[in-house]
Amino acid sequence: MEELAYIPSPSRGVLYLGPIPLRGYAFCIIIGVFIAVWLGNKRWIARGGRAGTVADIAVWAVPFGLVGGRLYHVITDYELYFSQGRDWVNAFKVWEGGLGIWGAIALGALGAWIGCRRRGIPMPAYADAVAPGIAFAQAIGRWGNWFNQELYGKETNVPWALHITSSADGRVPGYYHPTFLYESLWCIGVAFLVIWADRRFKLGHGRAFALYVAAYCVGRAWIEYMRVDDAHHILGLRLNDWTAGIVFLLAVTYIVVSSKKRPGREEVVEPGAADEVADGETGAEDADAKEADVKEADVETSEAKADADAEAKDEAEPTESAKKL
Image 1 (cartoon, rainbow, N blue to C red):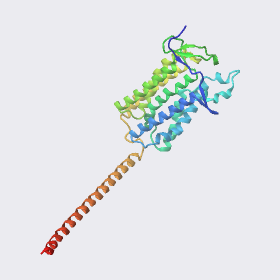
Image 2: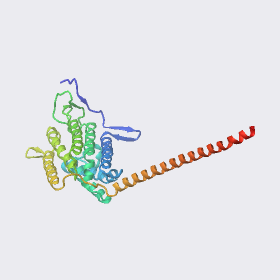
Image 3: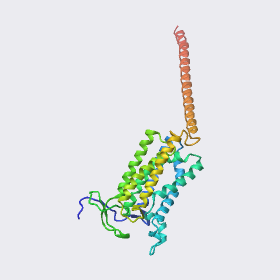
Image 4: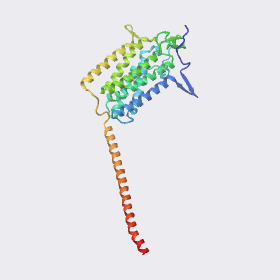
């Protein structure tokens, strides 16, 4: 069957800058992390926090998240690394693909908790600030699967079908649903949903993050159902479908319970940050006042000088008249 329109797959997932390999999968992950930190920092400052706090905590959260994502993938797909004929060393090759978002979020949250404790700030407030950025990071990271020609759906002849050309690791060349693209677009929608809901309802105490989790799980469930890669099944459903369902219920429960116990948003998200802003504003006001005093003194000096010149001129005029007489 000849396709008139389709999404082409890259011929290779790695480019070489001299001897240095630039892998598309890793590149997408790195860009996603930068976007998440940048947006999280803007949202954190808007909530009353210090600039740079998000990045400082991300130093803990990101490594933990990468380890957690890899662990989840290796544990749930252990046969790819520990079955007969497989090399277990490949379990450490993160750059070749294979990160489970569930493990990344879980262990990344542990890293963020450590960072928050060290800075003395509430973990839920931090999670709310970074939630949309994480969704955007996932949207970008999914394009890493496109570079690796992996995680696609069932065969299709839609105009946006993904053309798989590789036959490695059991792939069958053909045209498939681009589930990586579906999930990328869904994550973008989730990010904007969280931003809108946070502004509209003043979400706090971790509810913006919980909304992100719940909304993501809804999309992940139907996208996961379309995928054709090998996966463990429980009662006819893929493992990740069960995970998405359970996590969705937990997130919604948290939103409901938290809204009743602690409505509204945190008044203080980072102790001392508001005082620094106030001190800065006071210092600016003092500087403005000093500058105004200096200008006023200059004006008074100029006026005094002008008066003195006028008096000297008046005194000089009779003297000139006397000379003429």
